[in-house]
Length: 238
Image (cartoon, rainbow, N blue to C red; front, side, top):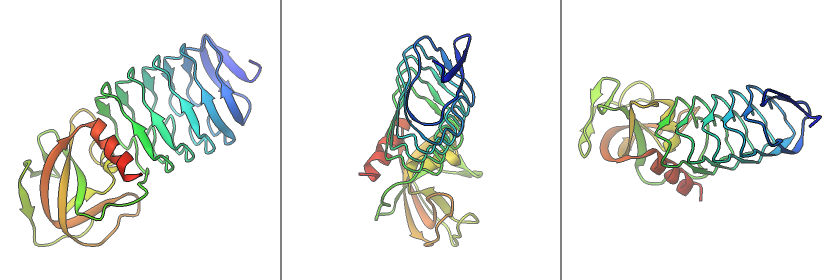
């Protein structure tokens, strides 16, 4: 207990920097910045008494490889696991309904993510800068839209094919992502929808920050749930 500062059930600060940590029973919230930049922290065990994980709680814990999030947790704060580069897998419990802004942004080591049916909203950049081990060789990609199937003012329809004369990454043409989780960096929240697409006649250009690609021909395939987006990500990392 001497390693923790706890006030009114809130774990305000962890005073040491490293090892396998077990949070004491009775803690109801991991406070904002509680483990901020604990660079040697390797694993964390959260008791069932915890219901909330605060903003920036594990921000840039670069050595964190393992964490259990119990079913008691209902909220995970913004940037909670930002740039936890050593995390390889994450299992979101059924008690969580929303994954907030940039929660797992920059977790470049992630290869397996479980998003339960309870999660209906994923906010902006929640998984940005995650990576797939391999990129599909086909023209299959993934695209986000507004809930009315518009993107940058252009109206799309499922099952339709669209062709344009010119394509240049981030300037003109049709855009999609090879990593489905990158779509959350462009369309997110309760008013976003996601589809599998076939993107052809690609320019060959690559985006510096993510897997965004561009082409002259796009066919809009089936709509994907958030859970299916995570499952596809897992398959790409096998």
